[in-house]
Image 1 (tube, rainbow, N blue to C red):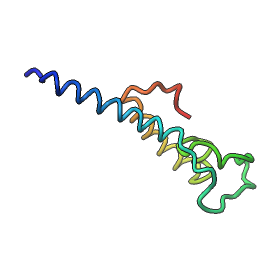
Image 2: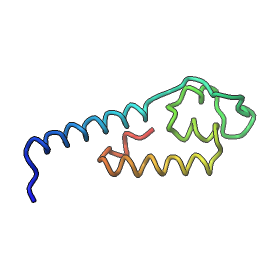
Image 3: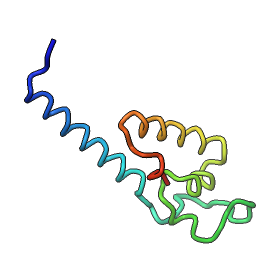
Length: 90
């Protein structure tokens, strides 16, 4: 079964928009932690709150190492599916 060329164009547009949305998500920064984070723990460095939300730096402080690794593994799988180069991940 062959797709109609118009459907192929729509699929390309959808994929492009999906990649752009994921790219925006990966670089999005809240600029602060939504609640008090323990700034005395070994992994915290001044300015971590300005890191992209979906980065090890931000999520480790927000939810701990295990939770952050789980979330980031989902993000990496999603990026792999849509073809975003892993070098672009924060």
